[in-house]
Image 1 (cartoon, rainbow, N blue to C red):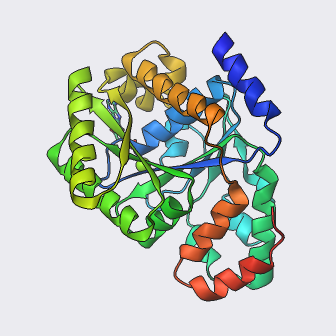
Image 2 (cartoon, protein in one colour):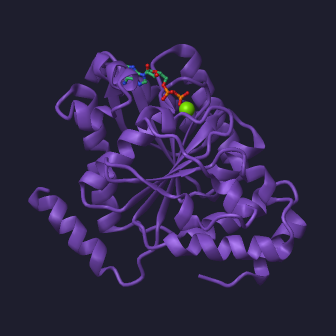
Image 3 (cartoon, rainbow, N blue to C red):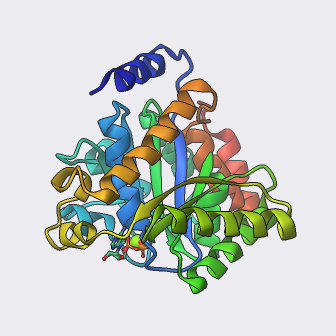
Length: 299
Ligand SMILES: Nc1ncnc2c1ncn2[C@@H]1O[C@H](COP(=O)(O)OP(=O)(O)O)[C@@H](O)[C@H]1O
Ligand SMILES: [Mg+2]
């Protein structure tokens, strides 16, 4: 750990009301690199001294475990059903982060009885002392993805320079904005060929969002198109660890530093209990679920 990382760690530790910051990673188009980025960002934050849990919430394709070469036996579904505790399903991986397999547990949340739901909310509070929870969501504007995005403290939209990915990024930003006005939306441009391409694409999305939607989108950075990324996926060993000096790793580290520095200075998270409450509120059975949640113990 370098000196700056040590300093950040100290500030984080001294923060009396430390609550987990939830960051949802999403995109309009699939296959733009959400899971790859989620894993590498989580590792980069951990390398900065932060405690990080990565929630694999892509219900369609659970990629996080494949990228890391792990096979989760249990997932959130088992916790929701009361068969396992949260601690029993969390996987510590050698890369220094914790993984929670979301699998198909989430849409079940809305169907839970009040007592089970309250218990789940209480359980999730147990890991609320972590610095970050990174949530790898699916692509597109499904209710499922949106409820994660709306509940999170901040959302990172991933795109590539491809025109179709840019159009879809604009689409997802539009639907996030139509559901919530105070969302902190940040953009990451993946697979760029040059620095100028990264900046050009980001500026384009930011301009369109500002001009037509009156939404402020922040440019968080870009990641080079890098053959090491594909190699690392094939070897099931994240490039942040197997190729720490490769272009993609350097880019992700810069993004992680940006997030850490900013959080030390100003923006703290609102915590996991609040995250799951928000998520449930925005889910389909909002009314009955919200009542159950209101009775759950507060953070
Ligand atoms: N920076 C990059 N450089 C090269 N290839 C990349 C990069 N990011 C992602 N990829 C490739 O794109 C594929 C899809 O990425 P993935 O993270 O699974 O996308 P998503 O989660 O958005 O569906 C990866 O398997 C990898 O081959
Ligand atoms: Mg994915």
